[in-house]
Image 1 (cartoon, rainbow, N blue to C red):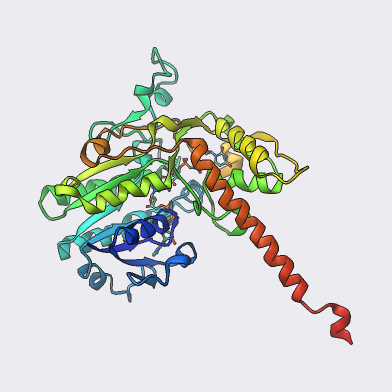
Image 2: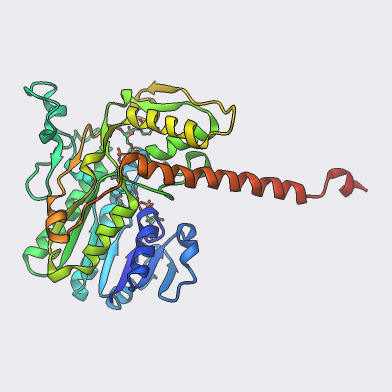
Length: 374
Ligand code: NAD
Ligand code: UGA
């Protein structure tokens, strides 16, 4: 069993991965600035949680890395709204701070599992050539392979791409250290994971969530589900339980199969357009979760600029080639989009009910004004 140092372990993927690694018998040291998503695990005898920022120079990052067998780095700003509004913060955290982790792994001779992103592939040739290709719907244009697909980013003024570029440059630095035989790394490129705890809902924090959470909040509140630029963009959704199973196999690294490898983790069978996702979520909500008489939201079109602000550009379509994970790890994601939406939506519906209940209890226990005056 390994001693795993998991940085960013309090996030969506980190919380599910921590649970999976503990189940597998590993010792986990989890570092994050938030702990609420792993609150249910905090008493576990093989989990140590440290509430610190990796950017805090008084934090003994070197000592932590020294004590681990393997380091998993999940820390990042991971939502497109942030790429547009705070591009420099994205560069600093997702590149500079992550580079410091990687270089400490080099110094200490430790294996690093680095979370990158499918965003590094960028746009498809179809998006760039604007219909000049003979068969634009052919999925081969959007099927991305780890070691052979070219990466296509938009212009600098579309600063959404700073996230993809930061992740891509970090990958290239790890590769270069690997070439010199100074770092044993595995890079993971997730393709749109979905599951309970994915994000806070937009109204709950100042944070900027991903599309699932915007749609979920719209369903719970009866406000419009907004489709950015028509909702024709396509994504392949991957259930978090399938995803962390693959990451867990990468941590195990059977026979060194993952040494200096890049893995796509995604579900190629689960491609939907964002419009289809909105319609499907609304149908599932109406059928399984909506209170009697609840108003179902309308689905409306909005421009990218009004939704995200200036500097946004979209990734049009992305399908993971997962032949490598199948071959080297025997991994196959089995969960369909409906099967992953059901427990994920259920989680948020319950959370909303509990919040409403807590508010009622709190209001009921507060002394009434008349009592106070008396
Ligand atoms: P997340 O935002 O839920 O998790 C990131 C975690 O990092 C958060 O808990 C956050 O508190 C923590 N963090 C941020 N700054 C920190 C700091 N200075 N010190 C310590 N912790 C800090 O995101 P996620 O979806 O769990 O993504 C994890 C990783 O996977 C990220 O690197 C992301 O870019 C990558 N990724 C995720 C997906 C996906 O489908 N969820 C897709 C592509 C890439
Ligand atoms: C995200 C983030 O970049 C990262 O978390 C990660 O690298 C990657 O996905 C991933 O999960 O693999 P993206 O898929 O564009 O990128 O992020 P979402 O916010 O989930 O948006 C998906 C699509 O829905 C985009 O086309 C966006 O414009 C659209 N959208 C978003 C809407 O139409 N309506 C909304 O309310 C929100």
